[in-house]
Image (cartoon, rainbow, N blue to C red; front, side, top):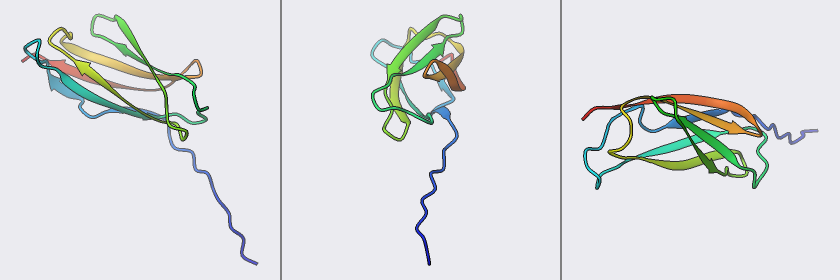
Length: 109
């Protein structure tokens, strides 16, 4: 007898951005669009995902978003001429815990 078995393989949790280094926009009319992707395991549909962005001066900004029913995260972030030069840290949080992090850098024009 041959049985059909379905294995649910859990993916590693992560957060990524499409650019790890980029030059700061020089004018108010320009911006740099960053695509943020990620994954959380055990996601419950409708729950908030929080992405915390820590700037070079250690100030924090939070983005609240949702994931697909499979736990996949996709959102956009705009960096402008007002963005700080230096290294940033991005943290993916779900269900009150830090799940993944990454870093990126904004360089001088």
